[in-house]
Length: 347
Image 1 (tube, rainbow, N blue to C red):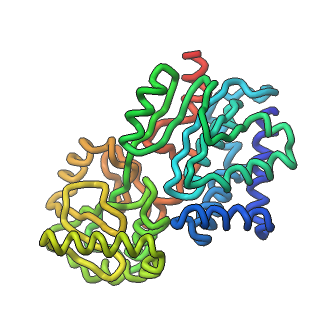
Image 2: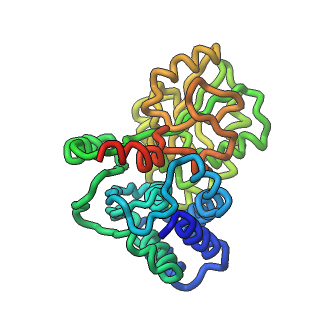
């Protein structure tokens, strides 16, 4: 397939997601929910809509691809790129899938046990309309080999395994990261409610979810806790409620000062990654000092939610943490440059 044909195929998939869901998509969604209690219909639908709007729009794909040297005459896949996908949120690895396809390579995908129904369905839908696209994808729950390069996403523990196993191949290996938010105390009610989306969407399980707040000293928590209470429906999920109750008990037993509103537990902590149903916070006196401190922790920060730029950390508006564009690469590593430029130089 030429680049133009690949773009056309992805745009077709976007149109499929824009139409009313068919029975086959409903089946994939129901199977996903049954296999993973975090994958509620609402969360799956949120993921599908975000993918449709950001990654499968024809004009956006064309504009994005123009930044890279992609051979439009490529007919067959150039290299085999192994993808090890995470399963923390629905279709979390879809951006990597798009990148490999757009670059003209074959994606050999190791599906997560937590998310093994949605992606194969979408690839089948595309292949039914564009049969040639089938040659660009292979899904497996077993070993990846053979492959020419690897992009692997997982926990800090699994990353050590990835580095050992895939270290001799060209690779991108991602570890745990989280988002932070820097507040001034002058946020509007709408902004605080939008922040709730950054905290609670996908139950806070994504690397782009806010897990830590930086607050001015003497910050008034009442407006924030009130705004976040709008998301109290999360406790209706038994998995979230179990985590909430467990972490609530630990705070009480350990006599840790905390703030709660029935759906989130907030405690002062210098860490970045908070447990499920929890949100860490830390006070600051000077935003410049915050930026300086965060510069030393960029390897664990995915992005910042803030009204102003925070050093070199990618900064997003309130409510936009889980709405990355095609150019918003995880961990700040340009996957398309790796696939279109670096990979050809290495191999």
